Image (tube, rainbow, N blue to C red; front, top):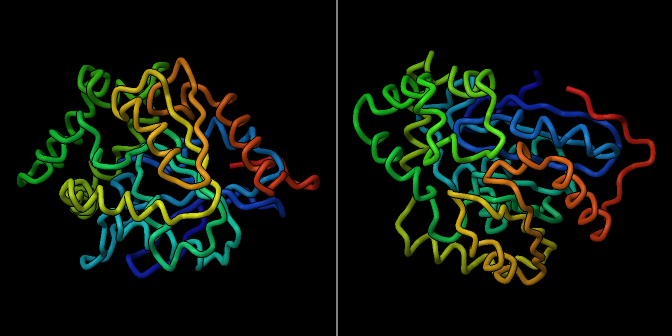
Length: 289
């Protein structure tokens, strides 16, 4: 897997290559690019770039002084995009919503449009059921306890946790991969805790959201109709927030729409890209991993 050295540390990433328009995908905590494994192969003609951000599923610990707050990670994402010299790219989020804040940073100039797929928004950082987990992460040994509990089937399948993020269910081997770095490394657990406890107060979050009204580039909001983590009303509210926002709702899905409805999601993304001036390259390669 290729990697790039950034100010916070070494970041792994996947890159399908090709000469098509660039799509940059982010992921949730403590996930990685495999969150999009069902969608990327359906986006032929696009260059798909998937960094593994330091949200707990990363394999290399960050520098002790790394800013792993939501705004800090948004800036790190912008640094990643700049380091790879990606231009006019499309930023695609799911679950973690902090990537939106790149629009408020100078590092966001290279992002031409955004696709917000069932993600944190407004004051929903972290989502309701995850607030208890964030509180546990503030306690010494709390992250270690959390990752151990994720090895228990009943816990990982609980509807108020990861079990509620997908109607189809997240495969056990994928969950094992996502939690393995934090399970095996104290330094990764420290990064995990730093991010998990970084959400600012409600007033600050709502102020940041209000500033996003100034983002004048196209935004597609894709929301799930059966999501237990991201409030249903946040979909239309987000689409109204952005001056060029548009809402699409996908049925029979929870937060992880890439897991539950990958074909429909890929169609909506492709349609949006074509409508906003980023059609697939006719010479584009079939994405590979």
